[in-house]
Length: 538
Image (tube, rainbow, N blue to C red; front, side):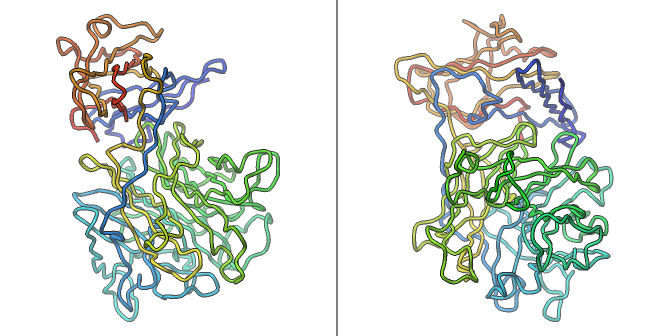
């Protein structure tokens, strides 16, 4: 049966519509692209086996990011600063209004008290950058701290003060489609209010705790002064929830995060470690009581789970319009339990792995246990465990991704923010698996309406070793004028090389099409992504 179009995932002025169509147990994806005042693009990633389901003699090679030599690029502040204890990207980065904007969590003490930040509060801090490497922390003059307001703490207003205290993961979203400009910045975060301060109660599932893991939402006009939504957590009346990401996809906002047993369990009711779950809301004010299981590491789902494997803090999500890409924490328990029970997770290690979703709910890992960002070697600043952020930006020929170091031993060693980069959209590439055999792929169908074009992100091609690109109709038949001798030929490498057919024919409008890409005889060709969009891209 048809699944709701995902048009509302994008601001109203944008023009890509992703349709998921289900027919008699067969799944097919159709990307419908229509022209509007602005044109976003649909992305067919090499690692997305829903967007590119049909593959012949091709293999996916995942890529590990390079870390910036200046890391950590955002460091903790001086004594007396709200981020003197640590500055961690339990937060978000976006490029907006000509600059990089970062929301992160500070901590003003240099030691954790009873396993938590002092007062269960990590200030929501703000920073800006022109290049994503060199950051400034502007004085916002909003929140009094140490006797003055000369700091970079964002203001959060709430009629329930305990809900305005961020304690853990913070996700910021800019929602241009919201008709109310006062609500276009949205965020979700974890607070730990005393039970007496929580209206709406909580579920009796799980043990009694000193404080409750509350999922809180807030909105803002400028991203600096925020108002908490409602007078209670979004999960009031339910179980605790450690929210870690926020995005809009289709008709819903989604908040992903983590739970473990006894608050969560496998499909058969058996215990599990940390897994990624999702709530949803159609209006950002009222959230579902029911949750979806979004992702678990493969070793968590085997008949006998692999010891120590967990999915840490859900995932940091990058919304590309028709697909979601994310980094999740590849938690591995310590080889043996620490002797100091105060720091129960000492010895835990975490790398960051890649996941992808085409429906906004269910995520999968293209290459299980492949680290996109690996923790550093022993003695390097980020050698213990990594924390993902909601922090991806394509700039020029690169993806910029920010992340944090986590000292699982509780000593706050090097808990600061680093930068890692990849080729633009270069999480992985397709290449020929077996030499001297033909290799090609066929995309899922898409539908166009307007003067849009196709582009390819590829390397290792030349006039002697070229990619051949053909259009197919909805029955997988070659389209005359766009196939055979009239197929497009890609001879130039690049992250956004136009696909041009003989006579510069435009894409046929109003038809279901698929793209067939045939690899050259050379084994050097590497395909990263295909785009349906305009000249400027995203």
